[in-house]
Length: 463
Image (cartoon, rainbow, N blue to C red; front, top):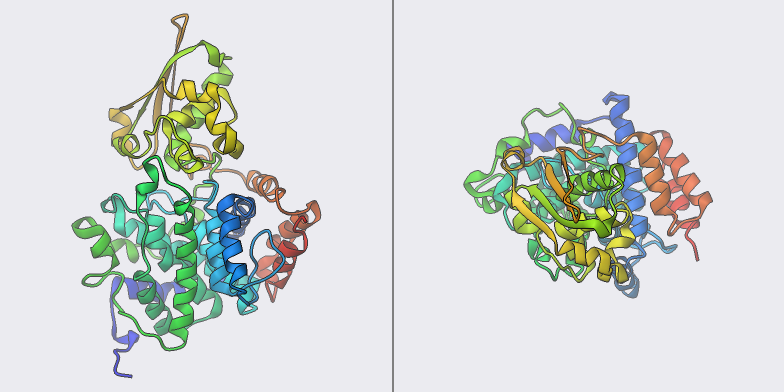
């Protein structure tokens, strides 16, 4: 084969890959491993809930109709399929209710991509629990660093779909123990699978945003399978000429993000556990307005107007006043503000079905005004909010919140994360199955195989 050896390439991306492949679970801090287990639980919960949503069901039906064969679990189902196809379905399901985690500053949802890719690979290769966790840690790190490398220059692109294939490839490669050469080539393949545009924010998003995570997870698993069999790709596809960072980030890309501070403040320990089932930009608005309503006993019928101060990006991407579908509602700041002032903004059901036509919510959403707040603009990419609620009797209530609960600045506790998993998983799995999954994940790093986790997920699926 007339091809350059990967070991001859020295770049920021190659240094990142070399570092991630050198990681050993026994050398990592106990709290980091605990965070990885929590990430896994959070992703599984979101995926199990998303499995019964229309997009989750459609993706699963397509794969089962293909009669895909393999050892990988499809959330909410008994029958296993091929690893790449399971990653597609599970990634789509996990990203399906806007409760999957975020890497702040990178604009990516790593859990919806990395976990499906790592789990499917671990099942296909009968890897140990330690290898699964190591792949998860490495995948989060790679995906977050690529997201930060693209930075704010990726305007209009959904960075989860762009950086996701690389994170999935690294996760899959680490889980199955691929060589440096193979992983670097898998990344080269994955870079040509990077995609995802934000047209879904403009009122008719449909289901496609969910699939951005699914396709990214699938692409990473497939890239590793191809690279392992000798399929070649550009070795500098990530940070070289016409590479992913240059193409998507242009002059504003930050390739130094790929290898700066490797081994410091791992991405998996700086993740935002989402509390509200909507775009992360909206969480401070949801939390602040709901607290204002409860603390001041505000009657929704007494509200005359609402003003929300945010950043200019949110106004451009999250300003839809009358969303007609779930995706649009989950990206709408006026709709979310109205839900927070009239309903329970933590409940995913208020963003689906007949709730989209709730006259109380819809009427109030039309009276929500968004404006660019100087302080919130200066703080971006922190998603702060300033809000004012004016009542019919002339009274006015003000609120401000800079960091939502669940973010690294105000993290969820381990108990909160477990309770979130229990609530979400209950839609597909039995109480016994949920208990068993929690027990298996708690000791996952000690298990010689991930089979107990697969069995717990499948055996407890409700009929």
